[in-house]
Length: 176
Image (cartoon, rainbow, N blue to C red):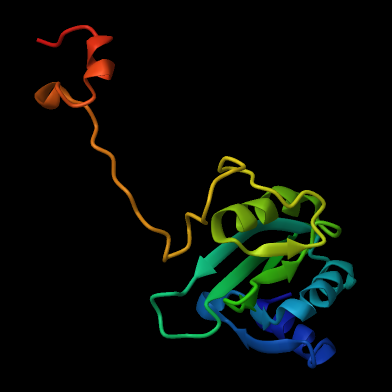
């Protein structure tokens, strides 16, 4: 099945759940609202012609610096092993109370990427069995991949600034 045929089939069968479609560089892309994600995902996995049985990636996007709404997006990349075709689901997420339903009940491979979506972007994944920080410490404040996350720097001790962090430099052998 070609990308064009996939998009047409999804538009035909789920017209009321699809916000938009696209074919950038020939890839099938559909845009859905968070409340439609679960229904669309079930259809894509269970439809006999599509059989998207492999979730290859889940990622988040923050469009803070671009003038567009919604600010956040969750992107799901699906692949059919039997049919050797793929599709990308793009779910627009509002800035106030950002959340999407889990797809881990359909694809177990979504468990860790959905936790990362929460940990890095602060997007709550409703229905996820272990919605907690995965990468950052449990008591970490903020979400590092958001564009408004404050960047900090730390001076590193080198041979040219030995006096900085002197307690660290003392334990190291002298340099030339």
